Image (tube, rainbow, N blue to C red):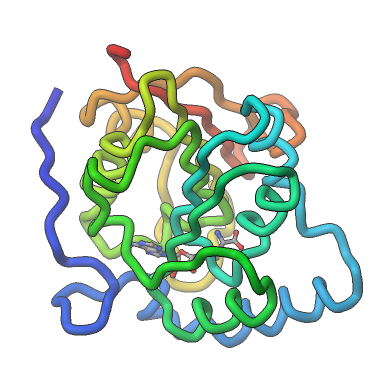
Length: 212
Ligand SMILES: C[S@@+](CC[C@H](N)C(=O)[O-])C[C@H]1O[C@@H](n2cnc3c(N)ncnc32)[C@H](O)[C@@H]1O
């Protein structure tokens, strides 16, 4: 296992390396799209339903790269103890306004330390992994590993085909090599949050510590 210390280079003001999300300038479109879906009462809870199925009642959950807070809020409604972290200031504001009572911190995954845990589940869904700052994937995986409870798990999901603008392409084999390099293991790979079989279009992974 490689020793990976998360560098302090993430997408927060005053740091050196922007996330691909910041480079994309995509925040406004995403914010507007999800505000519209929430206002229209559309289903935006798919990822949260799978996350909830992985957890005992009243579990401790970190939503890493929470965006406008939809997944974290859905898990809070299901009775979990949830913390959302998100480095994009505008999205932090939107999450706090949309979901009053949801704890949202303006923070980068790379700034997490073991003292922030332990969490039963870290949720890192909706393409967060492919919008990290270039070259920080292993550090981000290691930072999430370090906040896991003893039997904690990480739920990750991202597009494999046609990634959204400015997102990287992350082949499953490369992702799984990075997972193994930081001492995590793949418990499950599926093709959707409803656990369809693995496919080339979308990847959903459940990860845990290789040696619990
Ligand atoms: C497509 S949005 C998804 C947001 C949310 N997870 C959802 O599914 O609605 C991608 C998010 O990844 C976040 N992100 C990218 N790099 C990050 C990092 N290093 N730490 C935390 N969040 C990050 C962006 O700020 C953005 O909110």
